Image (tube, rainbow, N blue to C red; front, side, top):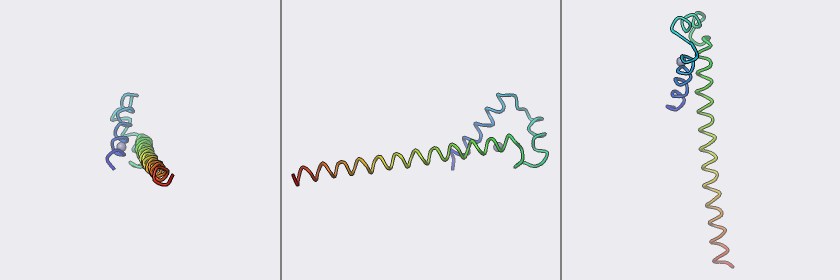
Length: 81
Ligand SMILES: [Zn+2]
């Protein structure tokens, strides 16, 4: 998912602005890429953004369905009442 990758990369930008440099990054990778705390933080950020967007789209869908139901109720009361 593109937005997850974007969130991940933006976290690296933030890390860089907070003083991360190539040497620190390489040192943090000494036990492997997946154990690098900069990567762990970036993966967390990416999945958090993805989860937030999925929740937001579900919310939007639920609202849309709900407004359809309201329309249906109004239509029913106009034709039945
Ligand atoms: Zn990364």
